Image (cartoon, rainbow, N blue to C red):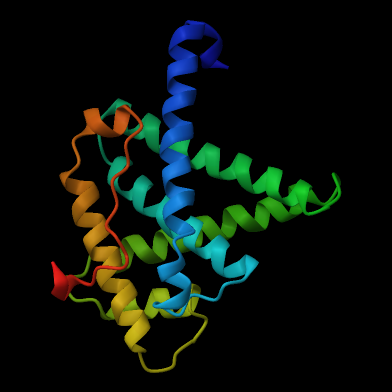
Length: 187
């Protein structure tokens, strides 16, 4: 509703910025390396989990900041929700079922965000490896796989790179994430 009070030029720039940011999230999530080298299942669920992970990482960077950063975080989440809604409709989910499924998507997103945020608060990667194993690699409580450890290292590198990115760059719609093909030991 408050968007009604902003000029159409501001709204268009903001929409374009969010489209670029969310587009970068989706493009990164679709990188083949995650599915070939990190053990992420190349399924609808696996791809969903990668979009959630990268959306959470972007929101993690922005949510504790100033008004602009918090607004960008909310707008990115809104773009994610709109994308999930549109995807369900494209997949043939009926109009009456979409709200129920969107509630589950929201619960999944916020549950994973809480798990990843809590895990990122620890200096060691044990909790992060466990959260990634459970949510993305679907390995449950099994001992950590090399893929889960590698994915945790990627997530830490992404957090560091996003933290180092000035807000002004993000506000222009630029989201620079690490190349998943490069392992930490290669940098």
